[in-house]
Image (cartoon, rainbow, N blue to C red; front, top):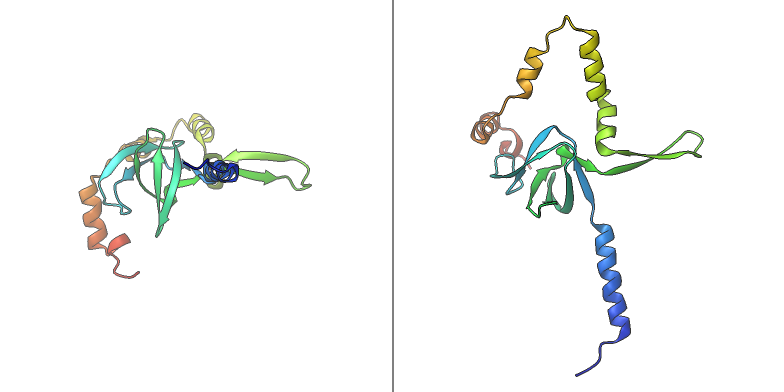
Length: 161
């Protein structure tokens, strides 16, 4: 039996290290979403995901990303629901470096976060947020979403590639 060459072992270790570094971590940026069995909006839901959940990117397919959850569940999520975990930001004079999470960047882009919402509600006690709160509680069954997409020729049902 031949002894393995040290060069082959080093290459193998380096390959594993590079693969581990290349694994991209994604962060769910929407309030709630579903991990799907296939790369389609109406595909069976495998797990519920919420803002801030971390996912490991496995592959991509036409706007969908195959990911693995921390619990080891493999499934698909639409690319619009996730961002990479960190962004490097440079100040104008390029001397100060800082980082922001994907959710912070997404919220900053919207100009809205939990603190801003709480402050706005506190300052506008005369405004009723009942309908906004009610809309956030809406849960639409996947079959109804699929019917909507089919009838409107939207998403996977739009007919064009």
